[in-house]
Amino acid sequence: MSDPASESELTSPAAAEPATRKRPKPGERRVQILQALATMLEQPGAERITTSALAARLEVSEAALYRHFASKAQMFEGLIEFIEQSVFTLVNQIGERETDHLQRTRKLVVMVLQFAEKNPGMTRVMVGDALVFENDRLQERMNQFFDKLESSLKQSLRDAAAAGGAATPTVDAQVRASVIVAFMVGRLQRFARSGFKRMPSEHLEASLNILC
Image (cartoon, rainbow, N blue to C red; front, side, top):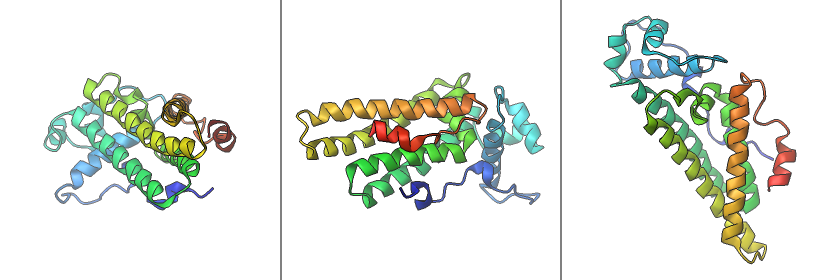
């Protein structure tokens, strides 16, 4: 199977080199703040990240952070936007390029799990571990992210079931899409809660053979 993650560059804000300029260009400081937040989230067992700790890492004042973000919740929203844009850009690419419905489903699952492996800090946001003490709207937005993924899966699975002559393709697709999303979320949770030791892609081919 081809690697769908190779279809688009998946570069976490944490992976970028920090700017060395004393006076960042407009917008650069926002990126630096998100880079630092993502990097701090990659530390296994990291506790709740405070704006004080984030400011200390960047060697700026907390007031400097709030010149670029109205709140810490807005900083997390910046990370969520990165997740949404990265993943759904690839979902669309897979949908356009892969005509086989089951292969499309498999590639979507592989892509999401590979994204998590490459962006461990983002994984903590995706599963909600990093959002426990934050604004409720952040968790709701991540819930909507997985709902949208499930809808994408339903479409492919419904088409596959109909092509296979299933008597109830819509119902079959709903059930299978729900199971696959639960599988993905479970893999992401295990990855985050194992201190990023249990890879989401572990035994993935064998697992997909059962799921798909």
